[in-house]
Image 1 (cartoon, rainbow, N blue to C red):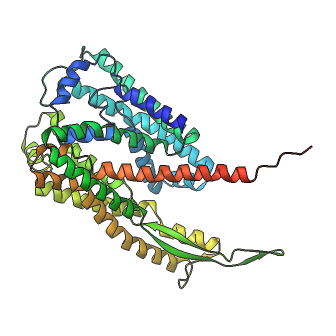
Image 2: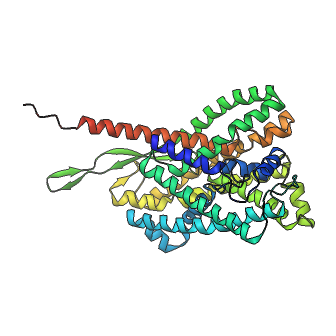
Length: 420
C-alpha cells in the first residue's frame, strides 16, 4: 500500500511539474478562462496535466490507446492471436509490442500538443503565448520530455502492478480523474451553491446505481463430468461462467468521446474554415445539440456491441469447456453451447449498452435542466469519470482483499516453532 501511494504521489508531481520552456504564469491565466468540450475532455483524462504542458502531460493516454489497439489487432492478426494463446511467454511478447506502440503513439500526440501551443490554438480564447521560445529546437525538447514522461508513466503503472496492490495503470487513471474533482467542485460552488448540493446528493444515488450495475452478472451454470485417471476420480464439480452486464467497461465511452472530439481538434488545427468546419461547429461542438446527443448515444451502443464481440468469443469458450469435460446443463457441448453463450451475451449487452449511453448523457442532461453553462463542463459525476472511479475502486478493493486473504492463508499454514 505504501509503495503504491508513493508511486501515485510521484506521478502527481510529474503532472504538476512544467516542461522546460513553458510559461507557467501564462498557462495559469489561459486555464482560468478555458472551457469547452474538447478542452474539458483533455483536462479530465489527463488530470489537468495536458493543458498545463507538464512533464507527464500525456499521462496514460498513449498506453491505454496502445493497449486497445493491440487488443483489437489480436483478433485480426493471426500471429498476435497465437501469442495470446501461448500463455505467459506470449503475453510478455504482446506487452513488449504494446510498449513499442505506446512510444509510437506518444510521439505524434506530444507533437500535436506542442504544435497547438506554438500556434496559440491550444487555448482558443487566450492570445497570450504559453512558450518562452517557439523555435524548432525548443519545441523538439518539449516533445522529447513529454514522450519520456509517457514512458515513465507506463513504467510507474507496471511497478504498481508488480510491487503494489495491482491494477497499476487503472490506479493512475483513477488518480487523474480524482485529481480534478476539487477544482470542479469549487467552480460549481462559485457559480451556484444549490447546484453543488443537488449534484452531491444525486451523485450518491448515481454511484450506488453504477455499483449495482457494475456488479451485476449472469452466472451460466457449468457442470464438469467425472474422469477416472488411474484409481483417482477427477471432475464432477459444478461451477458457473460469470457474464457481466457491462462486459465492455469504460472502453466504448472513451472511443466515442475521442471520435467526437477528433473533428473539433482537426478543425481547430486547420483553421476552421469551409462547409465541413461549419457543420462540425454547428452539430459536434455544443454538447446540448440533439444531433450531438443522438450521435453520442448511438456510437456508445454500437461500440459496446463491437468491443464485446471481439473480447469474448463464445466459440473459444465452448471449445475450452468441451476439452475440459464441461457442459452447460441442458445444452449439448460444442456448437450448441457456443450459440447459447452468444444468445445470452447479446441479451446482456443490450441493457449494458443502454446503461453506458444513459450514464454518459447525464452531464448533458444536467446542463439542460440547470441551464448553467458550467454544469456540463464541470459536472463531476459524468459517465466516464464515475465509471472509472467505481470500476477501479471495486477492482482495487478486490485486489486488496485477495492479498489480505493470501497473507492470512500463509499465516495459517506457517510451521509451528520447535519447542525445547
